[in-house]
Length: 326
Ligand code: SAH
Ligand code: AVI
Image 1 (cartoon, rainbow, N blue to C red):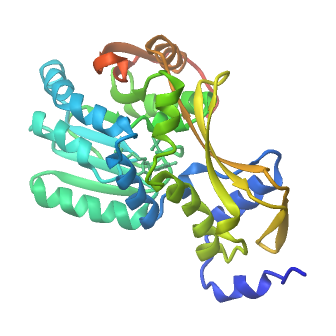
Image 2: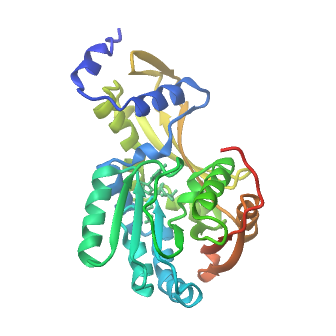
């Protein structure tokens, strides 16, 4: 006998209606999905920081290892940048390397969905760069966000291979929007993880210490805490898969038994071994990423590759000439 969930929902004072609607929509479809942006509450952001430190997760370490070089070269090429806009800034560590190499930058716009973590990160950043105007924007980078005025040109910054979390059509839409916001001639520096041996990729998303597992399960925990969802965390397993056709790592939550999730006054049945698809991390060759960028109006100006082609950073410039409906 399953208890109705109405009782639980009433105990939660404020429900994030958008979160609830996305959860209900994702669990109503087949296969079941949940949007990966909901990994990131305070705990999710902290877990992501821990992932960045595990041996198997080479992405952050590799990008940090190349960013000073990239920042110096960019400072020579683009000495007039006035404002940097970062999409999904997390702990704001990487932008500090850019700011150190570009002392003329007087504004930083930090966009992220993880509110408390974002506000703490920008507080620390402002203390370190007192002359910098730092504007936190709590919101979804897939939606148009208002940007403060600036005297110098803007540069977009999208590190961490977060672009890999978007399906190709969404990545294209994102790039197009950013291009329209920054305008013709605007620059965007993007970190993109490369396609490589699937064993290295799978390990990076299923680390031995189990931090990535916790990160994946955090989505269900948030549903319990914020939406009053009734589910048993122990009845789900973390699973990382490599999808060869789509050139991406997928994270799933596999149901360990026949069960229901109750949320929003509805019941969602999961068979044993059915999965909820929670995240994609697309891996790009340099050429494939350049083609994607070009399809949204961006031209490649420079590509940096880490040792053994483990990771790439792309400097793009917006040329426009592409029309998409918003
Ligand atoms: N840029 C940082 C953090 C990358 S982790 C780095 O490279 O280390 C991805 C970040 O994007 C997280 O901080 C997460 O909260 C944020 N994020 C994920 N999806 C988002 C979305 N749709 N809109 C805004 N922020 C998002
Ligand atoms: C933020 N993003 C690029 C990370 C990634 O690699 O896809 C999120 C992550 N998921 C599992 N581990 C890290």
